[in-house]
Length: 605
Ligand code: H79
Image: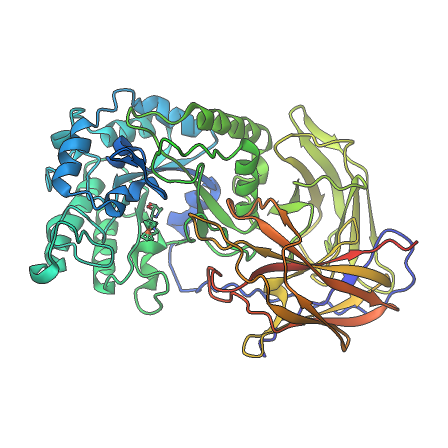
């Protein structure tokens, strides 16, 4: 049995009938991140402060813009050549041959990122199609030699980045290349090429390595080498590329996709931080050095029909959610064939930037939440001596309860455009325990339509008692990653301490699967057992509602009512779920992706 228990207490501001002993042990965190010695604190320092960067997917595919021979092609736009098996010669002549982004303005582009509050840009220098978006002497399949544009947009971008003090990184598809006959590997170009005489090593030596060398020696300082889809790539290649990159740009950062996602073994120290799965935000809290990559539409590369724009509010919520989990956000835009980002996205980014101007201290240089649990009203970030409560759901009672902050609070205020707005608060120790409890009266209404930030300044070094799991509305969350798990027996258990007896509704909140193209709720219809202190009830999992999910756009949370429970008197209880087919693997796509169980008090008549 995996021992990973959280002790928690159900309580409320309303009259309590009693308290019992609370054990104060910190919850473990089921994060699957590998802590390899990576002597990289110095070069990561800027990245840990920056928090927010712009990802840019731009290539020949935007000339097709998601349409081929009069048909709209579903799915991510930059894969259109692969999906429609477009021959290399046709791709070159009909699409590269018509790529003329005369409206591309590198200065304006970098200003857009800067004004959105972003500190770095990562642009596709070569995506899987193999087309170099710069002036490459290695292959004529490039922007200068093969398009009517005839210029090197990355040169202009590098110059503009320097001018505006924005760091630059290059995305380079190191393994997949649909142009090169020797790049035979998983998802290769099997419509033009026959693998019989192909030698991957030749592609590697003739194109992949030399092009990365060009990018890292002809564009000034390059802060990031962003590689993708290593799947099956021999570790010797990853090592060779990382070593070359560091020899040319000693301070460069390399993301984890330089090697197989699941790879464990010698060489793991070659990358600096972990990129999570596309459009996937880890459920775990405060992980070490990771990055979420998130689209602003449903595609990375521009598509005509792709107008499902993320709002400024969604972007801000994703950003602070990622920061609350210790990560950085790399937010993608896809310029079109003229070189321009959709004005709607530009407007949203501008609004995000204005918000960050006023509230950025909850983001820049901030660390993840110190709590081992999530909160139902929003997310927490922190800096030395200060916690930031980012309030997504305005609590009905007009206050926030926060238990477990053991330090003496010095002041509580809302950040506003006019400065600090002091808020009244009370701090006390919960009876018969050593757990501190903070009650903050919120302003009458949200201060910001995008995200209101409440700062809690405290004395001394932060000390958290993880034993409480409750919030202002007595709703109790039992997070998946805090459960005691027995995967073989399909059992999850949480021990907690009930202060306020009564009847509670039990809701199970899970996510739709992260499959990008058609989100799907996996796990409905299964029957399982809910057990509280030995009293078991069966339930069948069904969808009783959905919650818009600010964490894992574009997948919803699904709510399932699984029963009611009664806590007759104060004391220790165990809640157990058994028989559920759960998704346990890292990205949690096979089975039910359980996020948390919620206990919601049923008002007594
Ligand atoms: O660059 C963006 C994507 O193009 C790239 N990573 C981000 C940052 C990416 N590479 N691979 N994938 C994403 C996932 C691959 C999905 C696939 Fe398919 C499933 C490829 C073939 C089957 C999606 C569906 C694309 C074609 C069909």
